[in-house]
Figure 1 (cartoon, rainbow, N blue to C red):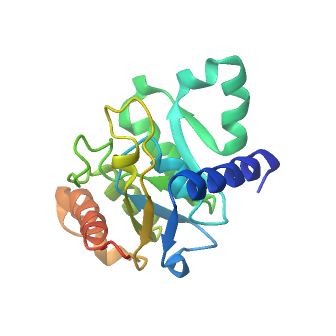
Figure 2: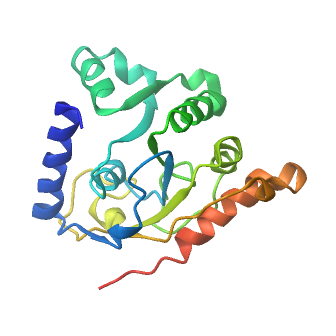
Figure 3: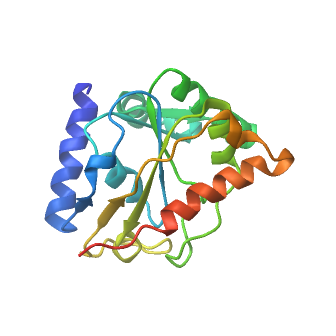
Length: 204
């Protein structure tokens, strides 16, 4: 890890364990080398850093390019593997960037639902993750986060000291045979990923 990413990684590990009793269940199912999609449900702004500390490898995520215009933030974000996406370019810009990252052999965090859940419950996956799978055949690690909605819900203004747990599922692997089905193939792949996330149960 680069020094700044390592610093953030260590900081959020401390925050997670101190304020949220953070736990990772089934870390043995993490893919440690090569391209990988970490696909997790999305409940809170806390989700990206909590996903990041589930593993020791560096993850890449996307953010609006406007965040990079701030003097300090613009220098920090690239060093912690956050890549700019022009919102005016629509979903296509984000998808192309994610495909490029995976083809270079890195791991990326994706929220198949596309946005934070308004009530903490799982939402249907958007077809974007299916398109990324179709373009790269990258394996997917399904992950489900529990407790982040209670810690910081979508409309919340402050943190609550609520326990947060991330449970990993068995990785999903894809072949060209999975890419049949016409125009529905992207949504079908996305649904498979979301079904795997939904099947993950909380572990005491």
